[in-house]
Length: 522
Image (cartoon, rainbow, N blue to C red; front, side, top):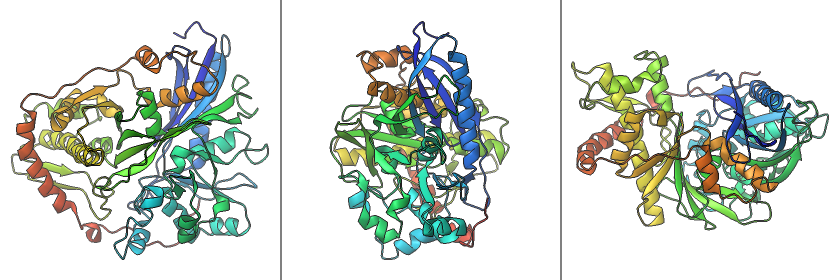
């Protein structure tokens, strides 16, 4: 039931597969939410695209429906937007129409560009400026691919009609009026920090990196703080949301960091969804990254200090469970993986490396491909299911250990959220693998709440209520402790894992990506 208060903050959360609108009351309790999914397109091996209009229409539909629900008794005070990061969209600022499909963050089509830029072994040539290695993951090389392969994009750039942006930019542009009513072209510091184009010190686009990659500065969005006045919702939407200010934008992982209350140095969270993303707040310090870990922006309030973070990203976690269901058809639904894995005490020696789109942190090996090792005639689908869960836990362990090398001391615990936290067996396996306490969220709205909290701060919505009190109202966290014998058991599993990792490398030549021929147009 909605709170008795008449004021609400709207969080717009557009992830990799769906758009969600959620209304939070002054006590942080969820009043209403709506969610709509959009299609993933896989036109070639290693490619992943989305229709920008599908993203926009799913978002508008969810916004309008929750606005209709709240209109009889309440008002919306502020809007925050959180989004899948690195995914890029190019559109025409005259017509407002997309020039190509959105290229999704996990897309691998820029692999050849990465190889060309790193022929001398310098994958870290931009890291001192941007905090990021040269990788297919980040937005810059996706922009470069569009410029090189899509005539509509290159023509629009020549005619000064082209705008590039991540999903937050595309949504903000359209929600604030689009081409006919003064839509604004912006992104916040957290999303900008994922382009591989932003200077972490100045929080502006780096002319040096843009010139090196031949990306026109004028096509990029203006960079703004994460929390503060950004723009106003257009009159084209439901009357209950019209003229409401947008006062926050956060990349989805940074939004989850804020949502868990990790606003102090040393606090960390991991989100275990289709991929896994771990962030540790490093305060106002830019911690130089190596060991396969990234330096990124955590958040910034308008007029306030910028906070930074270390991040480790894993491409395929829950997506590996989805693969068991949809491709191998070993299970009917992803929820069945836990039930089946519980029927065996271990993996029976089976090890799985889910490198379907290469390996992200801490390895950064786009040449890797998925492998399963150690199968015998006694191997069952239950062993494979358990091996998939074990693989996720082991990838997380590798990232956490790399983070600990950076900060110089062990991390005692992590807050956890995401779809995989519904799986109690996996959570116990993860706690045992890390030999750390985990604090999973009791509800699944922490990413949305993070940007709602940032939006509310900008308009003094929360009436000075402490963040931790709001988190408790939202549902708080429970605790998962590792078993006493966890560390001893981990050693043998780790040997199997490291062997399988090596076997997954240098397989790109056997599973090649398509040549960068002229792209299929919308």
